[in-house]
Length: 238
Image (cartoon, rainbow, N blue to C red; front, side, top):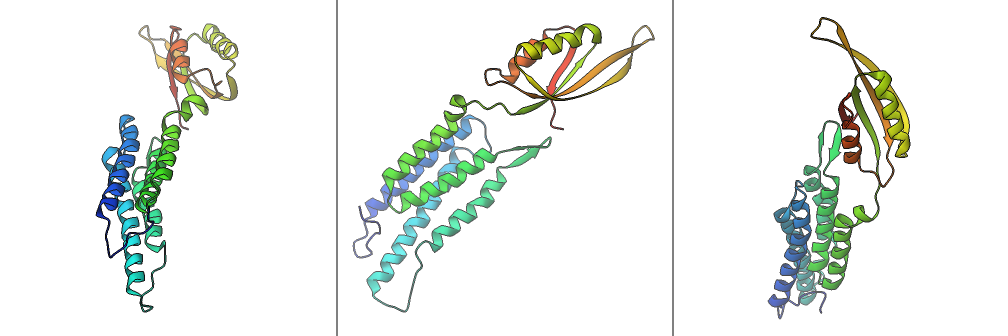
């Protein structure tokens, strides 16, 4: 497989193969992102990979054309055009990153777009097999890695409850039985009017927790919510 396409005998079938390969790789990775309802899906990833491949093919054609002309008046620096793809894709990736409730989302999709652009360049230059292998590794990172290596980040959990004398020991016992590490705790009390005219105390504890790898946060919420005195269990970002 020639690295560059000769201008005398343009191998259009070779260009077509590279374009189809770029579309396929971008489409596969994009389907995984779209399945998880991420900002950039199948079409975005396919177009990014295709565009990068076109740039790589164009650069190869330009260099071959200059070499065939045999002139020293024109010089082309290898990789200069492709480098603009690597830096320029950052603007598109930034568009997939957003902040909601002081929580950053979309970083993985931005990274996958950047990787897809790199794969497109590789395919455009003719490195099919290497691009397929790297694309396989990218799919492993996106789909398998998180299931194999479970990392539970620190959680800030707000628990609202009543009947402090009975409920607080229940919460402490649950945390201890499930090997949940309490790194910090903040608490305060709200006084709410009751139907009989008296005030009812709502206790609010804000925990900073480190969950063990075998415990999912959703399971902890369901199990704590079984206690009738616990009104709310939710995460907090501050």
